[in-house]
Length: 96
Length: 96
Image (spheres, rainbow over the protein chains, first blue to last red):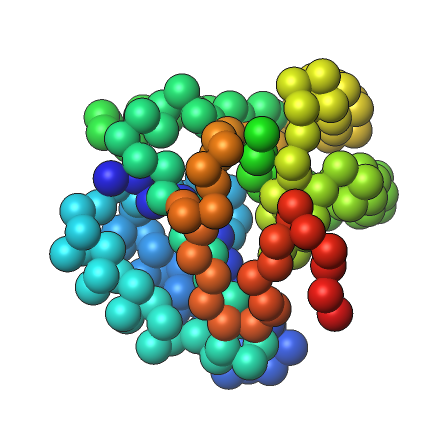
C-alpha cells in the first residue's frame, strides 16, 4: 500500500535539529523523498506498523507532527507533480 | 473533493522568500494548513482548476515544486495525525 508521510519537526533547538535529521533518515529508509518533508512509502501493513513505531519514538509530540495519508493501491492516478524534481515510479527504478 | 497540497519553495533568494509567502497565502485562501507546507483543501473541480492556475503562476518551476494528492470523498478514514496540532474537520468549524 502507498502511504504518504508528511512531517513538521521544530528545529528551534539543537535537539530538534537532531530529531529532524533522524526523522528524515528513517523516512529515507522506508520510502522515497518527493519534497523536503514529504515521503511516499510503499509498505505492507507490518512494515507500516514498524515504521510508525520508530518514527513516533523519534519526535517530540508537543512540538512536532507526523501525518500519514493512506493512498491505497490506485495511488498513481491520484498524484500530480508540478515544477522542480521529476515524478518517479516508486515501484520501479529511480532514474536520475 | 479533498485535495492535499504540498509544496517546496526555494528560499535562497528574496524572490524565493516572496514566492513562499505568496504560495502560503494562496493556500490559506483555498484550504486548511495542517503542517508548514501541507494544506488540505475541499474544492469542487472548478475551484481546483482556478487554484492550480494561480498557484502555478506563483512558483518558479526550476526550483520550486507543488504536489497535489486527490484524496477523494472518503478521505477522512485515510488520514492519521500524530503529535502537535490537533486534527480538525475541514468540513466543520475550526476550533481553536
